[in-house]
Image (cartoon, rainbow, N blue to C red; front, side, top):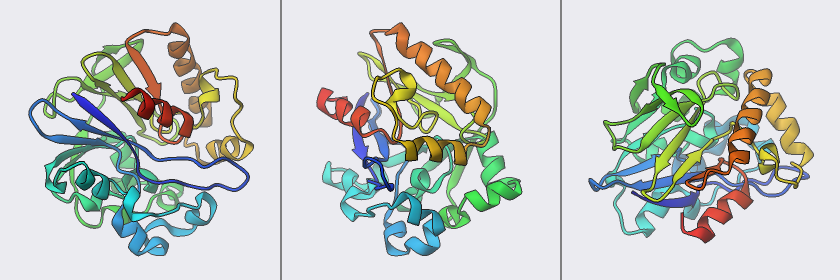
Length: 264
């Protein structure tokens, strides 16, 4: 499978470096397109107050039409309708804002995340999520717990209905049902860790995370203890240095640019 790395939402948090919304666009062997996350969408740009709420004043998204997944898919020569599936790591607005730009796509999500965001949110989750993001009626495909071991994770689930080599690796903590997504490119695996970590420093990179990112990561954690445990697990996997595995996340601009430079 061919993988394109897209930045679908530059953000300018105060006193920190710019961050990205790192989205994967996958060309499957069957010809379908698959997105991993969607970043901000055209509807967010049209109505940021209603769609994003007060949090936009903290994360300060640029909200440029040319950065949306819809526009980037079209620039690559595809039609938006070619995107048949979107696999979301979680339901924060910077990850699902573009869903409404692909209304016919099936949206794959863990059962725990759907429960926490849509079906039965707690009071804090009702404040966190923006129901307007799914008011267009997405075609949700719910994935329950269970699966097979993968790279030390106990219960990963291959999404055979989409294509072989796309695997959900649930890693709750940032949100109730957060998941990583692993993609087999044929030469190596890409583990898109979503918001399981915010900055490459969590993997052991000598560059420290900006203070604003560390604070934000703590403030928005559904389970902070689990977030820290996830950091340790991912750092251990990174230290193993498996030659056929690359770990990226949603917001680190350096990890994103490395993948762009390496061609995926």
